[in-house]
Length: 135
Image (tube, rainbow, N blue to C red):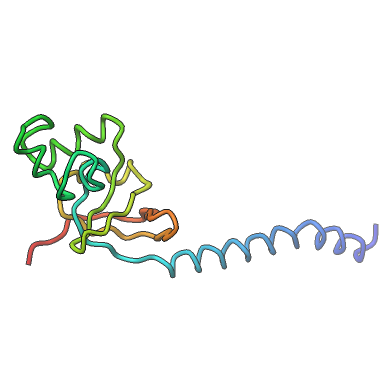
């Protein structure tokens, strides 16, 4: 086999991989640029979406003590019983959170969520979460 044939074989085998890697890099860069920061309480979907509440809060459940005595215990109870994780912003916007593995442990607490918003689904793909620091 001559060197031209060898180069041609190598080129045909490596070029699709290189193009694929380039496309993946562009897609991930575009995805990262769309990340936003959201501030609010990590809650359960039932209270935040007024399924068990009239005020988008845990107020009614805490008063009745039927779901626990704190925002944390109320959220944990509801999430364990078919609720989903959401972030309830100060403006009363509610966004579903897709990464329970990252969000678990923040129930009922003020947090800063970094993620990519899917505005059609009102869902955040969570990239990072931290407790909100008090001023």
